[in-house]
Amino acid sequence: MIKQVIIDSGILFLEGVFPPEIEVLYLSPEQITSEAVRCADALFIRTRTQINKELLHGSNVRFVATATIGFDHIDQDFCREAGIYWVSCPGCNAQAVCDYVEEAIASSPHHLIASSPLTIGIVGYGHVGKLVAQMAERKGYKVLLSDPPLGIGMSLNELAPLCDVLTFHTPLTHEGEHPTYHLCDANILRLCKPNTLIINAARGGVIDEQALLSQLSTLNFQLSTAIDCWENEPNLNQELLKHVDLASFHIAGYSIQGKMNASEMCLRAFCEFFSLPILSINKKAVPLQGDSESGWLKRISDQLKAQPEHFEQLRKQFRLR
Image (cartoon, rainbow, N blue to C red; front, side, top):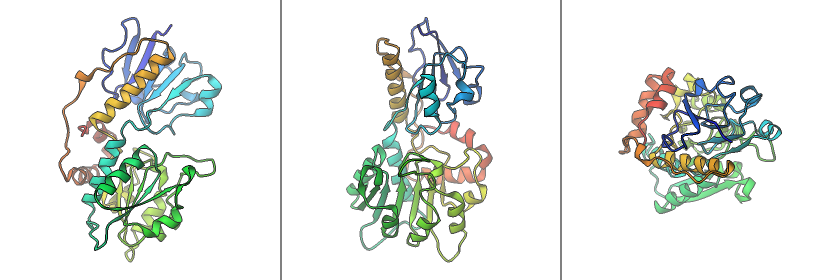
């Protein structure tokens, strides 16, 4: 029998949906501690909560749902050994991330105007990558792909010199045949054409930030950049931030529909795991629609550069697109 559920207070649309016999606690990521989760049966979390032995050892937790595409904040080995079932939400905010890429291209300081069709290189051909490819094709761009794990397209070494836009949509992995940690390193950056727009709306560690800073600091070779995901969030490399053209606070996937999709996927998985009747999200909890007009990315970039120490606060206050 399930008695208690803890939900990250940033996860929307779940208010009032659980049966009255289940105690539901809404906590901020900072409040989700080992002491707080000790009596919980299930957790609904986001990327700011590290699911590991330190948090869950000795707890009653049997189920974890992360309302995110990424899952590198989950220690899969520990969960397997502890018998904890976990789920993520692949594709939940894919359209929002695709929209972010489109806005980044439109807002690029070099405007990416070329006599021939724009060439966009898409690294990672999952839920997001497919939508980005469709968007690019609609706009008449030439689309090139790189996804070695799927056996699709070319290697990143081959792809990088051919692109006007290089956009990353991979998970963050450290092991295996094709690890993505620091996938975009100094070698890849040197292969890029001048003024190539590099977009990271994937995970912070996919780009080697020290290598990127070194390249951006070189006056005789300029890249354009749109960075949404950073290493060591929320403690940004402020020197890199100064050199990035378009900077945002990990909100590429933030949209009303994306949040609804994630909550719905988490809730369904929860019900199936605990053999409960399928519950429905509370759609009446939809917040006010945020800024979706052209130029919104440039505006929030200016905001972050002016207040980098408020990364988390800006992220929490961001009005959903």
